[in-house]
Length: 139
Image (tube, rainbow, N blue to C red; front, side, top):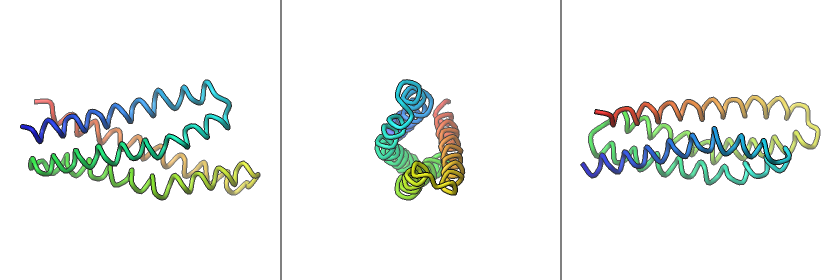
């Protein structure tokens, strides 16, 4: 019972964070700030955002695994794993491409758009996965 409660809280916090950052905070930042200032602000928030995903995903995955729920546990482990990869590799690459793009590199513009689109698709897939996990708590 306790493991299930911890997993539920971790999953709910995870979903709330992802939805708030993706669909409330980021759009407001870009609507209210100048584009360059908005980009710097979101860039500064990304490490924290992905750390929350990693930690909540890992806690949820571990507690669900201990509670013998392999499918939702695996889904949260994948979400946490992709967040770790994004935080450690994709975000630094996006930052470098943004800097090159700002400096006028036309190739960087295309690469940035492609990688940014891919990262947004992965984020959306992670949200869907977390929703699926959260639905397993409804009895």
